[in-house]
Structures are given as C-alpha cells and as structure tokens.
Amino acid sequence: MGRISGLVPSRFLTLLAHLVVVITLFWSRDSNIQACLPLTFTTEEYKTQDIQLVAALAVTLGLFAVELAGFFSGVSMFNSTQSLLSIGAHCSASVALSFFIFERWECTTYWYIFVFCRYRNIPCVGVGEGLPHM
Image 1 (spheres, rainbow, N blue to C red):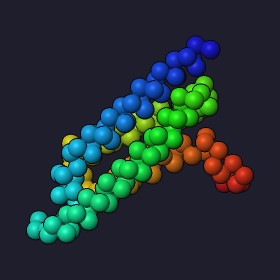
Image 2: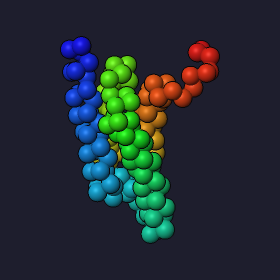
Image 3: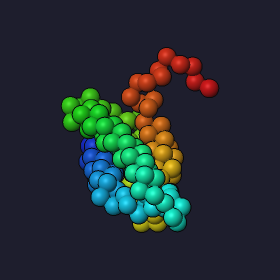
Image 4: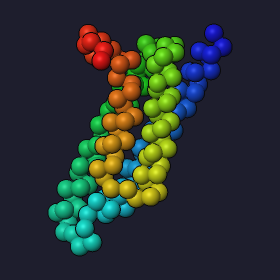
C-alpha cells in the first residue's frame, strides 16, 4: 500500500509540471513559430503556423482535462499501472517540451513529442482492449 500512496502525489506533480510547461508554451510560442518559418516570411505564413501550434496545444489541453477529470474523480487515481505510465509520459513530456521552448525547436517536433508521450497512456485508458497484441 505504501507504493500506491507514493504514486498518487508523484503522478499529480508530474501532471501539474506538464500542464505548467504547456501553458508556458502558449505564452512563448513566438520563437518556436519563427523557427518553423524561413528567414523572410509573410504575416500570412506566420498566422498559419500560429494557428497550427495553437490547435496542437488546444488538443493537449483538452486531453489534460480528460486525464485530470479521471484522476480527480478517482477512476484512475489508485490504478498503479496507469499511475506509472502517466508519471513516465508526463515527466518525459515536461522535459522534452522544456527543451522545445528553450532550444526553439520547429513546430513539427511538437507532434513527435505529443505522439511519443501520449501513445503510452492509451492502453491503460481502455482504448484498443479488444485488439490482438502483436
């Protein structure tokens, strides 16, 4: 029982760390958008890249709402497998997105981070349970 009680606060803290990094990315997305564009770009190209990055961040925040609702309702709070996968995914996403912000990576890199850090949580939510394992 000691391991489970230690996983719950760890999961909560990694969820909040990831959420803080995503909100920070909303505020400082200008440098990442400029990294996606050539040296000379039009305002239309800038707006297109901005809309794409905001859409990606909005999807991330929507999935945060789903995960936090499941966590706070108690549905997944004491599931140790879900907690371990969530801690690993959100911790790695927090570190990767910190580098994304500070190193000014291109916008397409965000989707790679998103897929890598979200795909590990999908089997624990129940999606794909009827599919055969390969």
